[in-house]
Image (cartoon, rainbow, N blue to C red; front, side, top):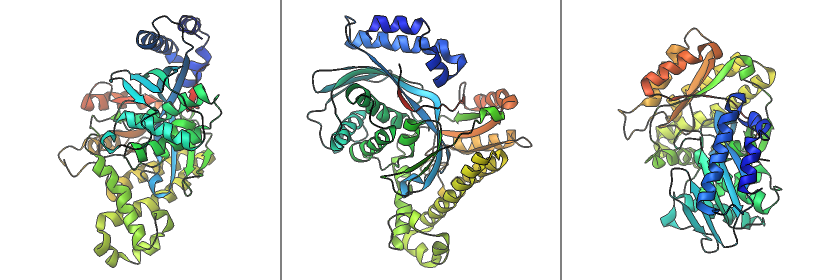
Length: 429
């Protein structure tokens, strides 16, 4: 549809059922306005005459539920897509230049006919993510073509809800529907997104974020073979059991934490290398405990603790998956808390050693533990850690009190009350 027709279509309520599925009943009017305003933004930038055929697309943010820092060593995770997302209005372009304007950021202009291989000076730029997605699609034999797009996102940058993974997946989602008739699986889009981030962006991330944003719902993923991850859908409605998933943004900044993030997979792999292996997934806890003295000398204490976290976390993922499938919510919550404690004590990603006086995550965990004392629920560090967010499961009746407490400490709107959405990367309509 063209812009005027599409705007009228949305305002008529024709997409309300889709908005209900993606965002919940209370957000329908908000989403009508959000999408129509983005169409207006696209017209202002790229379609002043309103003559182009437009596509509407959405990619979910994600919340890691279990498996903290395990995917990069071929581990197991549980993750879920959430009702915060990045949306796009896009149209095909005849030239080779992608023009993409994200709300609040400068326009990306990427000549995809020239930017064909990684450029070190462009590492960590969004241009590199766009170029990397095109490169991966070409390698896989998928069709590619330039486009113009405007995006806006409710997945806050640095919130631990995977804004970068959602952006990468969105570029793949646009290419999928504009040039491949939607025939590429979201799993393959996620793999391309990881390639873009690893090779073109210069960040050695795992695959969980991209996969959870793209696939949708609650999923358990086993990355023993990253080229063919085993994905299992988990049909469990946390809200129907009486609990909200709350994410508390402590206001910490992820800037300058690249070294902290990179040290985790590097140190874990140093333990594996000691035993002649490539990944910690190939080791056993007994092997590590049986070689502690020589390991300490070879790799240091923190690397050992991080490897032990990995192996314990892998076991927790299995136990928590079984608990959800069996409906044993108390056992699942016990695993959430155990995961958080392992991250704090062994993985050591709750604050950065570069600035030990700033420990927003530690404080938020302390407050969550105090508030939920004597109540059912759970809490843990969320996402990559070092700064950003914690996660808590709070009973419906306690949510407003929990939100008020967290907002009073970390600022208005710090506590986000979320729902898990069933769809990951989609074309609207």
